[in-house]
Image (tube, rainbow, N blue to C red):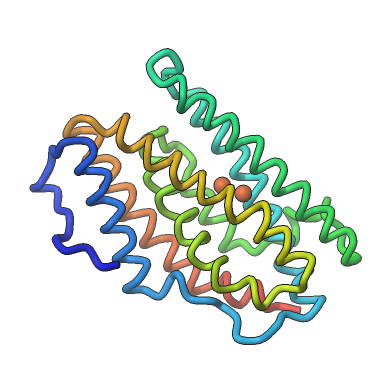
Length: 227
Ligand SMILES: [Fe+2]
Ligand SMILES: [Fe+2]
């Protein structure tokens, strides 16, 4: 999945479709190079580990509702009626994911309402990256970055989850997250149409993925394994 020719700032501006394709190839090459699609687990998670991981996952989903909502505010709905409807669906999906995971956590004996206190600071720092980003930058880092990484990882990690949690991911969350990645891709194609937007998308994507990898390597693997 490595990009044939890495995208550089000197290449910009590009035709929007070509820009989107090359940026995505760039992101995939990065994910590949840094092992970000690899499973963090090599054995089936125990109930306590699963429970602990669910707090963070609920936090991620609830924050993703906010981000979808914020993107919606910044979108010119008259020019992008399809994207408007898609972002609304994304907000709805993220809320549903949060609700299903909270229900699962509750069934496992956890207290979903404690999701903020029980999420690692390194995870919160990743989400803080999005403060102040506009819709172009958010699409580049969220749907085309972190959601893309999560999507590849889920495909490998489901075998380590308990049956019921794995089913929620396989039947509902994974296919919907795949759709969110598509929404981000089409936002890149429709919004990154000149040098300024392409430059901002490229720079933010690069900075964002570096920070996500750093935090990911430092905290998330351990946080998820904490019993
Ligand atoms: Fe989600
Ligand atoms: Fe999502």
